Image (cartoon, rainbow, N blue to C red; front, side, top):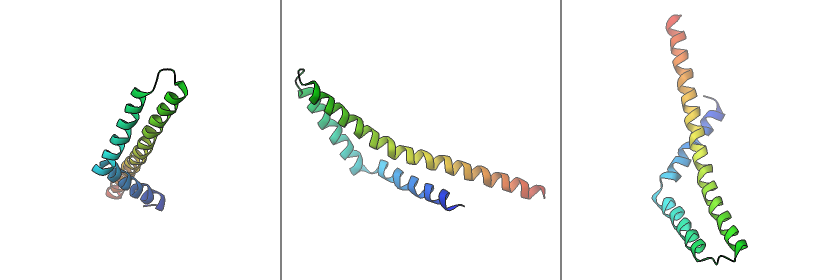
Length: 95
């Protein structure tokens, strides 16, 4: 296994552990709830304030999506390695 593949699998495992961690889940939920509360309390005339809050909400979602992307990359690498191993076994059986 190449070092790049090993690193991708390690990063994916760490990222999955983060996404499954109850404390991190609670932290994301708390920040999201706080942002929604601020959005609801924001005066309609405060367009700049509302835009800032929406940007903060988007950035929170982007952080979570970035962690999920690392997990997904690890899944692709794992599937590729599994495929290559199956090919090697078939070639070995034929020879």
